[in-house]
Every structure is written in C-alpha cells, then in structure tokens.
Length: 66
Image (cartoon, rainbow, N blue to C red; front, side, top):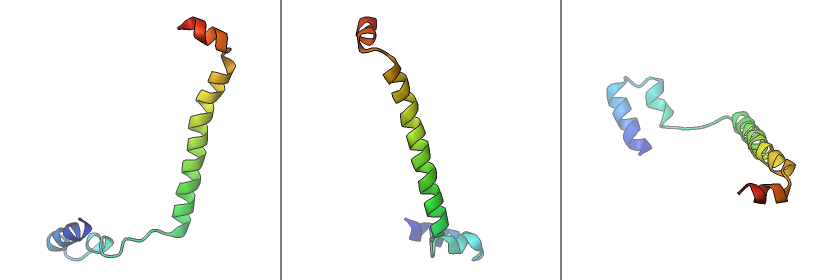
C-alpha cells in the first residue's frame, strides 16, 4: 500500500517531502520511547481511577444495588 501511495504522490507532487516520506519511513528512537512512556502513564491512569472507585464500594452494597 505504501508503494502505491508513494507512486501516486510522486506523480502528483514533484518529488518534495511527500514523495520521500514513503520511500524511507523512519522514526527517531527518542520519539518511540517518549510515546511508549506517555501510553504507559495514560494506561495506568485510565485503569487506576475506575479501580479506585470500585474498591471504595463495599461488595454487599454493590450487590444490593442491583
């Protein structure tokens, strides 16, 4: 798919940045580590908040509510 997009862009754009981005798609290692840290932190927060609320409810009250 990337080869097809690169060929289409090469025909429509005169070999500028858009033509070369699909030829050699690379990402800086710092960006990879930064994105990984952000995803880990957001995952911890997204899991911690509901878990904290669930721990605060007593099991008998939760069963009685249903």
